[in-house]
Length: 70
Image 1: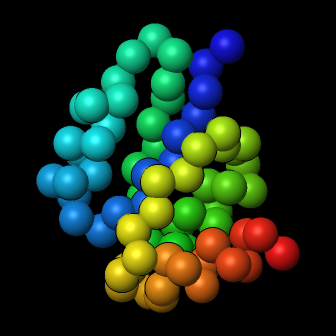
Image 2: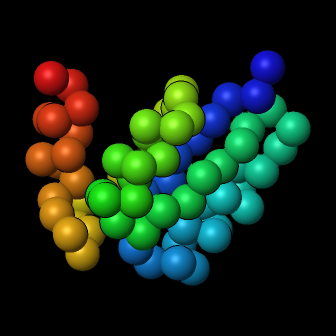
């Protein structure tokens, strides 16, 4: 079973590096650069892991995390 990982990171090089490091037959990485895009992806896909940047162009990752936990 493939595990979906959502990478929310606005630094494209860093996001690509994380994706490269996790690339395998067991993981499918989805990259987004902002919280709005992350919310849209979460509506259509289920994720087993989220890698979340704190400082994003459209909000704070910690606030997003609190919202997810509620």
